[in-house]
Image 1: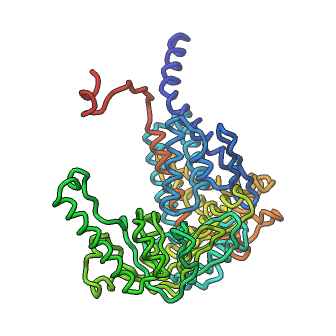
Image 2: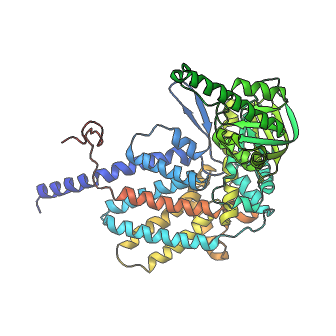
Image 3: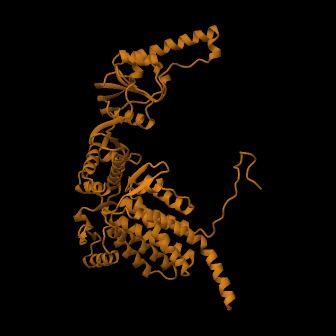
Length: 522
């Protein structure tokens, strides 16, 4: 082959790899943005917008969602982090770092000449084996008072003892049955508030004040009415009001509205929560009756309050029902009070489903936001531990699993083995980054841990980030939810496969979707 032919062939190969290398670089850049936050010695990131507003955080998904990222491959990784957050609520940094590592080593194999199809096949096989081993190593926690739960919250809560205590107390108040419900999120019970005192109580918070200061600030042993509608009379159009029959209809509706309001008063309702606005007449009558009324309540808060008090949410048309029938829709609470400083209404010890609220406070807006994120991570990890059990943290599990994946590689023929090796190398990345962030040599420490795990037969051996010594992570209290690890490697495999399969990048021309000006351009 002539030099000219070799040069032409080389240019063709480089052109084919251009899309892959471009995407790989974008993914690595995203992973690099968060890898410095990993582990107990990870540092914070400062995000600054064009107006100079600052967010200081150690939270991976916050960094990824707030950073400016225009490259399509970078956005794919960010979406994976969002998926991890949505599914588990924690572990987004680990998922992103592993995705970046898997894409990087996969591309390296392709550049060396391994066919993309074989790399992808090997990655699939390696991820499957990794998931099998991780699921086998998960230790279930049947008891909500298990001391390991506190350690899970402490690790995810970045060593904030007060936050871990709050989250564990909330979990105990709610109970295991509620924690393992598919649609319940313990992190939703977290409220961060500037100037608030840390506390946990059985109840929910409405982030609104009562309609006026003349309403009571505290009521005990009261009935609760929840209206997912406006508390106003039905509206008559202006044209109809100009007629005699229309005006008569208006007067009848006003009278019916006052009758419905009187039913609520006669029922002895103490608190009325309304999704939309409240008519002046209702405000006046309820104030005179010594009731508390909160309008324009967020739908999420409205439903939490109904669930906790046992109230059945109604529309305003249901107020026409007979008073005995209407009483069946009421909830009950032991106490409701107004916190004027925080501009909130607290509903405590409802007679419905148990619902705890974790109030996390700090002195400044920037700090309270980060404490809120930390508390949500701790709550999500604790709940994930109850659902799927726990595994040793600090990257020790992933390192042990990498050895099992390497064994699978030894029994695999052909170039698929190179893809399996990509997974094994990726699984070593979390501990390597944690150790590096702690100021130790990752190559040295990984070799020491691998040897110790093989010699002692303990997958829980890892590195103490304070001393650098090889230590049992269970004994050290570095414990993670199994679901966080499982979802992270699964997500990394999915994004790596998606990136590696992209052969060409083509910019789309502008077009109008069908139904907007005649459809796509010719």
